[in-house]
Each structure stands twice: as structure tokens, then as C-alpha cells.
Length: 322
Image (tube, rainbow, N blue to C red; front, top):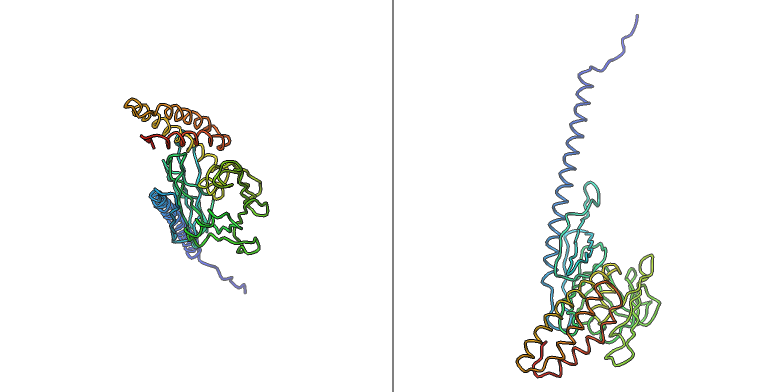
């Protein structure tokens, strides 16, 4: 007598297949929805950060600092576009425990008329401070956005004083390299032992050896060297990569050239009223031209003498232009 083998009904198999397809489509739809939600969330977060970076400005020589707590682990990417005054592009991506831990960045937020120095970073806390950039009049506020810890090894008095004033928990000043916290990005002065090394080169009529110099960055896979003029640009070179730094310096030189032209016109008007600002007008025109040359790149220290000449001429006037 032949035994019949148990058979699974076709309807049951069909139901399993249909159920699996429905489950797959449901999971796909949820994943798709979550990705769209994350994209929108990252875009909104970038928009909020771009607004928060805008008002952090200083009308005095000292730095102004703030702390921004982010809701989740966040990747921040800033890029610089030079074309005249130019702009910066901010993109944000956030960490998620659902689906892909990291997905593509949200929509780019354009930041115009600001000069934010930063590099690719990841973290939950963003520290921001700013300093006025003067050549010799105020040209703009420079903003520094930092997530990483930095350790300044035996910094000069000016830098140490500002670090103490800023009181930022991710900035530390120590006497010896061995005192730096593990994982901190190290910054040395007149010493090549750190990831970032600052060399002051002002040995003439200067207030400080660090009035201008170079910053050598060994933190990444390649060595990068940039020139700076004044402490605000020294900080900029420390906290950003060379591409971001050079692009923003070109933007600043474009702005300096335009502002110098305006002061040259103001000098002309005052000279017509008997203020004796004719020489200053000439010096402002020269400063504008020299700044224009530097919009194509080059050593920013080359403009220092023209800045000093304009400053000295203005200080000797009864009718000061700036």
C-alpha cells in the first residue's frame, strides 16, 4: 500500500510569499521614510547652526566664546567658495541607531558675508568663538568653530591670556607636551614637537614675535604650511585646514580692498573740507591695490608695511578717517 507524502497547500505557500513581500515593502517604506526624515532633520540642524554662527561677533579686541550642545553625535563639514566676497557651505549629518548609522549629508546651507574657520569634525559639542580682524581698521569678524580638544604647549602670554579668558573646556594650556590629554590635538610654539607648530617671525619693530609668522600643520597625513598676519589669523590657521584658510584669506583680502576704496573716497571728501587727508587717501588706494593682488593668493605678510603706513598716517591726523 503506497503512503501519501504530506503536502503543503499551495494557498499556504502563496500566503507566506505574499506576506514576506508585504513585510519587505513595509520595512523598505519605513527605512525610506526614516532616511527622508533624517535628511530633513540634518538640513534643519545645518540651517539652525548657520544662524547661530552669524551673531557671534565682537566689536572689541578680545575674543567672544559660546558653547553649542548638539542633540546627537554630529558630523559637520564646511567648505569655502572664493568668488569676490564669496561664501561658505555648511553640511550636517547625524548619527542614528536605526538603519545606516551615517547617511548622506542634509542640504547645503550657504553662509554669506561671514568668515568661519573650521575643518571636518565629529562630536556632540561645538565650541565657537570670534575675534575682529583689523587691517588696521576692522574688516570683519573671524569665527572659529571647534569640536576637537586642543592642547597649547607653553603658549605665549597673549595666547595664554585669551585661552584663560575664553574658558573653553576643549582648550587647554600646559607647560610640557607630556601634560596634554590623550586624543588632544597638540599646538607648539617655536617648537616642532607637536601636530601643529606655530613659528613667530616678527623680529623687528613689533609688539610681539608672534605678530606674524607661519603655522605648520602635521596633524593629517601631509605637512601643510600657511602664513598668518596677526593673532586672529594665527587662530584661523590652527583651527582650519590649509584649503579653508587660504580661501577665506582671499575673501578677506577682497573685502579689505573694497573697504580701503571706501576709506580712500572718505579721505577725498575730508581733504576737500581742509582736513589734510590727501596723503591718507593715497595710502588707502595703495592698500586697496595690494589687497587686490592677494585675492589671487600669496603671502599675506606682504601687506603688513602698507597697513602700518595707513595706520600711522591716520593716527597723525586731526580728522581721523577710521
